[in-house]
Length: 76
Image (cartoon, rainbow, N blue to C red):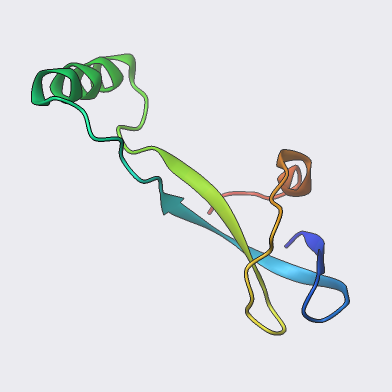
């Protein structure tokens, strides 16, 4: 688990990393179907996901999520 500064605990604590589905943009049906089939045939995941981190001590969400904070995190 990555060690990230928690503003609630005021110290560096272990954080759990979870993936959350991004909010979809309202698009036309034809455009959303074209995007779905395009990502499906490219082999990419069809749901856009974003990383979120939560403190293991107080369970509050980290305010700022930077890509280098999760460099050592391995997916299960």
